[in-house]
Length: 627
Image 1 (cartoon, rainbow, N blue to C red):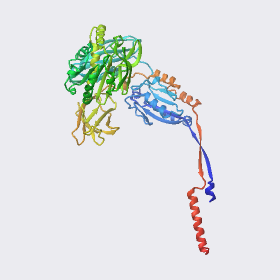
Image 2 (cartoon, rainbow, N blue to C red):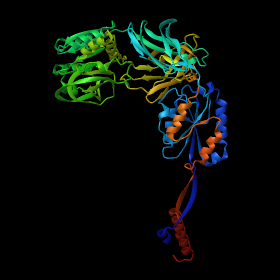
Image 3 (cartoon, one colour):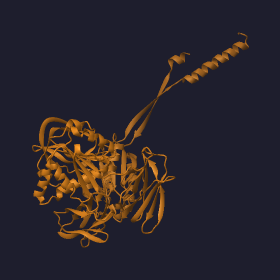
Image 4 (cartoon, helix red, strand yellow):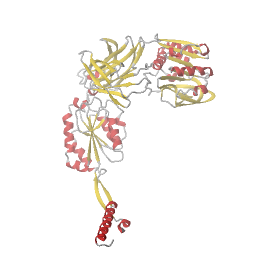
C-alpha cells in the first residue's frame, strides 16, 4: 500500500536530430519540353538527391508545379500554365517557422499570377535556370482585353498589348479577322526603345451569338517563335433591346444628357417620367435610373425592392440622403448640410468591365452634399473623388452587385458638363456616350432565374484544363446536392460525342476536361431523371500559352534571388550550388531532447497485486483454520 502513496517514477531521455528542410520546386509545365530541357532537369534532380552530403545535411521535400503546387516527385511536363508566385508562396506558408531554403528549377516564364520577381520570401530562393538564355528577335501579342458581352449593332472596345524584343526598328501590320475576313488592321512601328505598344479600337457586334476573332501580327524575317504572333478571343453578342426608366422629381440638364447618351445605341430606349406621374410596372424595365432621390421616392424604393430592379442612382444637391441611407443599398453617407465640388480621377485598377480613361481629370467637378461615404458591400470604383486638387480614395462613380441586383451610383450632379467637355476635347460625344453605354450595359445584364445554371468560357487555349461548373436548385431555389448531372460534348467537325459525369464539390457540380483537341464543341448539361438541361458551346484554339516564349527569363529569376537573399544558378552549375548549400552555416541540424516520464508502478498492476495478495491470504487462513 505504501507504494500507492510514494508512486515512484522513472525518466528516460532520448535525442532526435532535426535536419533543415530543402524544398525542391520543379517546373512541370510544357515550356520546359518546348526548350527540350526535360533530360537536363531530371539529371540535375538525380545528381542533387543522390549527393550523400546534401541528403546528410538536409531533409529533402519534393514539389512539382504548373498552375498549382503538388507534393510529388513525378514529372511529366504537361502543365498548360505556370504560376511561380503561387508555388513559392505556398511553400513559404508550409515552412513558415523553419529555415527551409527553396530550390526553384524552372525557365522562369510565368503565364499566370502576380509578378514573382518582386516578391518577398521568408525563405531564401535559389533559382536554377533551365532553357535557352539567348535573346532572339521576337514580336508577339501579349494580351487582348475586351468585354465578354455586347449588344447587337453596338460597338465594343478592344485593347491589344504588343511586345517586341529586338534591336533594329521594324514595321509590321496588326490585324483582326473574323469569319475569314479582315475587319481591322493597323500598321505598327517598333524599336528597342519602343518595345511595347497598345492599340485601342472599336469593333461592331454585327452577328448574334458567340463571335470568334483572331488577332495576328506579321512575323519578322527569321523569327524563331511565331506561335505567339496569333491570339484568339470571343464576344457574345446579345439581340436584346434594353428598356430604361428614368425617374426624377426635379428638372435638370443631366436628364437630357443621360437620355441622349443611352439612346445613342439604337438597342436602348429611355422613358423619362416624374415620380408622381409614373403608374407603370417596374419589372418591364431592365434598368431604373433614380435621379436625385427625394422624400417622394419612398414608395418607389419599396416597389423596386420587391421587383429587384437593377438601379442607376445619381445623387446631388437635392438628394434626400437620410432616405437613401435607409434603403440598405450597400452604402451610406455621413452628410452635412453643405455642398462640395468633387473633381474626377480615373481609377486605373477598375476591372468590372473594360473602360478607357476618357479624360476624367479634365472634366468639370460634380456637386453633391459634403460627407464621407461608407460601404458595407463589395464595390468597384471607376472614378474617384478629388477635392480641391487633393486626391482621395472616395468614389465618385461606383458599381455594386448583390444577389440578383446591380447598382451603379454617380455621387454628384452636373454630368451634362462632362458630355460637353468630352465633345470639346475630341470633337464628338462618342467617348462619353460609350462610357455611359458601358455602365448601362453592365447594369442591365441579368440572368433568368433558372434552376439549372452552367458557367463556362466561350474560348479556351489548347491543352488547358477546361473547368465547367453547374448549379442546380430545388423548387425553392436552394442548392440541391442530391442530383446527378452529366455533360455530353459533341465535336462540331468530327460529330464525335462523349459523355462525362459531374462531381459535387463545394456547393456546385464541377468537371475538369483535359486533352481535348482544338476545334468547336457544343455541349448539353442535363440533370439525370429530370427535364432540366442547358446547352452551350465553346472553342478550343490552337494557341498555347506555354509556347509563346523564345528564351528563359533569366533576368527575372536573378532578381528573385536577390530579393529573397538567395542566389541564382544555371543548370550546369550543380557543383557550385551544392557547395553554397553545404557551406552555408545558417542551415544546421538541431538536437531535440525528448524526455519521457513513466510511473514505475502503474495503478492497475498494483491493484491486481493487492487483490491477489488478499485472496491468497484468505485461502491460507481458511486452509489452516484461522477463519
